[in-house]
Image 1 (tube, rainbow, N blue to C red):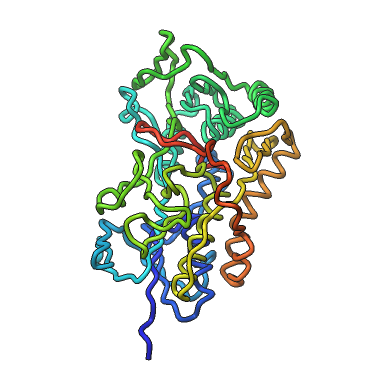
Image 2 (cartoon, rainbow, N blue to C red):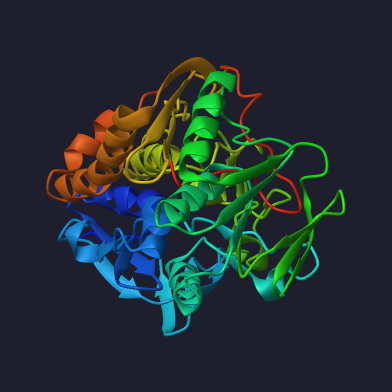
Amino acid sequence: MARTTDVVVIGGGYAGVIAANRLSTNPDLRITLINPRRAFVERIRLHQRVAGSHDAVVDLSEVLAPSVQIAVDTVKRIDAGSQTLEQGGGTTRYDYLIYAVGSHSATPVVPGAAEHAHPLGTLEQADALQRALAADPAAPVTVVGGGATGIETASELAELGRSVTLVCGDELGPYLHPAARREVMRQMDRLGVTVLAGTGAQATAVEHSAVRLADGRQLPSGVTVWTAGFGVPDLAARSGLTTDAAGRLLTDETLTSVDDDHIVAAGDSATPSGVPYRMCCASAQLLGAHAAGNVLRRVAGREPVPFSVPIPGQCLSLGRRAGVLQLSRRDDTAIGVHVGGRLGARIKESVSAGSVKGLGMMAHRPRLIAGLTLVQDPRRSRLLRETPTPVGIPGTLTD
């Protein structure tokens, strides 16, 4: 009898879950998903958890195929030579590994931010922020970061009646086309959010009850939320694998590690050819599906294929009654077409709810996942995909 092939997925986010489900189409594989908690966290709803409008969690068993084994643990190190994982609770051997550890809020370099600001990249951080807000319902809130996470968090809190200032740096919603940006600004005005952007609107220090800006202004802030950039876990770097400057696992265009054919990466922690895709739910799911597809091809003795799919754009919620859908070109640059207002809100909610419903459906019909991937000409333009920075990765966890 042939030995069972063990495939391990590290990470139970969008990329990891969809990868594990697609792997389950091969009954000869033994699939294990390792995650620090048994819950699947809807990262695109963390701002709603803070505001109390959604729990943003479901049990992993609701979105995983029944054949996938769940191991609640943390991987400390990958030993590629022996194909084993060192964990808090022991070791696990693998034949193939899908590295889908996701992302988190970047460690801020601004003085005082680490001590006095609340990041919003994990379930635990969302709960800590919720407690801080509940402790002083009248405290003014400053949200630092003009990307999607900052915009959505500021909108959600302002709709609750909080006094909110959004510190954007150079520009509000840098991904957005100017037309969509104007719509976001209109909704911010409606909600009463004070938006600071442009010259001098960079946070230079965070204090216990204030945020200082580059132009000398001092903003009173009872609660400061830090959404200015994202980082990735350092597991790959700690394990001696090749990464980019931000710590993402360096792969070729098939999402295979440049160090080891038995390791494939997906989601926010992958950097194909050193040029990663934008951090978002849409790209994570597509990357996860394709990574699993290439593992299935290798198991079957076939060559892996390059990944190349267009990301459709970005969805933003602006409170519960408005939203924006920004459409994009195939290279993920925004175009002058967007949907706003109440229809934008309905689309955003449909996307958010559909993500979890889709994962649950694919858990029981995993062959549907193959339809998510589309191989295109690998010579396509990728110059505008996000590039890494040492101080945090501009991007979004919420579209």
